[in-house]
Image: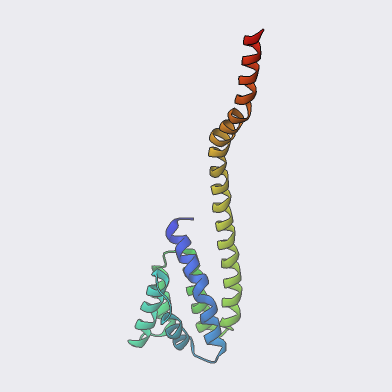
Length: 155
């Protein structure tokens, strides 16, 4: 996953619970998007802001979402826009779909963070193995070698 796609996925994960909560509160899709975008920043918020602006200028929700879908930069944003498009076309329950999408994307973000942490852990072992451990062994052996050397000189 590219860095931009990771950022977009994390932004979508942050936006989804707020959007689902607004929808469960009885707001329309457009009002929920507008309320959510008041608190959101980033590329995902800009794309969704373009959708809201298009709707406010008179474009139907389905057409505004379809237009944004053609320029969706990440799979997570594309999936969110697909959910919006499907719910507006078929009248399905959007809040439940957003919750399941949020859980899926949150698990993907957690797996990505865990793999990055695992790679960092491996990189942190290199100085330990090649620098700290040999120096510790030298400090532990040096006094004993000095004592042996003095005893051998005495013989």
